[in-house]
Length: 452
Image (cartoon, rainbow, N blue to C red; front, side):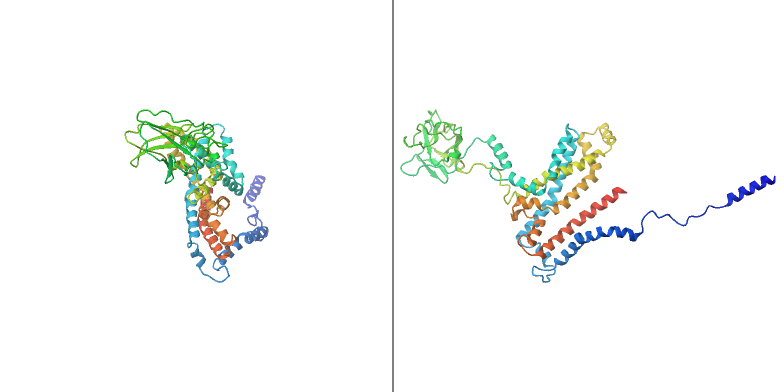
């Protein structure tokens, strides 16, 4: 019993003894001063490359080019003057149009790549422009937008499509002879017959000064006008020039070529009553002319410059053209991010909508888009930040044209591109920083919310 009591007492004594308490929470992180010591090089570099330029730019924006205090004059000057207002307008167009279009195109590409074979190859091709510098992209599109169709791909394609649907040709510089009694004369840029013509008769319209480069290969030897039927007027339009001389003037001769594709009109009382187009040998037939005399006319459009495409780098289209180049570069970026978001969408939600009878468009609009909204917003805001700083493409493709200028380019022009006014350039830089700041804060806040 004593042994038992002793054992119980010993057990009680052991059970009643509390384990020694630890002195405090174990420190697994270095002390604050050591962490700051390791961060110091990065903080110094950050301060030297980011904080100091921002602070100095803010201070410099209140001084003029000579270094005298100017107050807010530099900020007010951003919205004064034609070039500055054009830059502000173009920046607004960029912010509204470019991110929206790129996001929509990226969304379309991302959705399509889920439904086609060789999706990986397609994504690679679309994303490839991101590997090209903006400088190289600007040079590429500067060549694409060349006015000459023989050099610019864009106008070459437009001219090819235009020529597929238009058979009319033009002969710039061509016209009638002016010396002596001629069958045709010039009238306000058009060529008309010198004497009226009636149905059943023929008309000859000889032209000279036709440049060799405008004479098509399909042109055949000029033929005499065919016999005119009832209610018809026939004729020939040809290049009245014989190599080496000889031949009879105002008559188709051997070696002379017809002018195909020329538009011919019969005009009575100022109204066009019949039209025709010349054949490869230059002959034409005006049908249903009616009774009474008419004047046969070759409209002025036959002698104007041929269709050469659009003036992409002109004052009207230059900004949309540069936005098109931006779309080519950044569509792959948007597609990749949105495709990652699509891959994360639960397939059960899509299948449930289809089972409930929803069409593919309804599934896309009411299920896919709402679930993709956070990704789309991140892409859109990121592109807005990037667009506010766009400089390379505008500088290279625009070639210094004020009609293409944006605030980032205007900032460089004022400071280093000939303006030599660092105060005005700093004011524009500060304004751009203030415009970018809300978008950056929005992105940071959204990232923190997603982490939570």
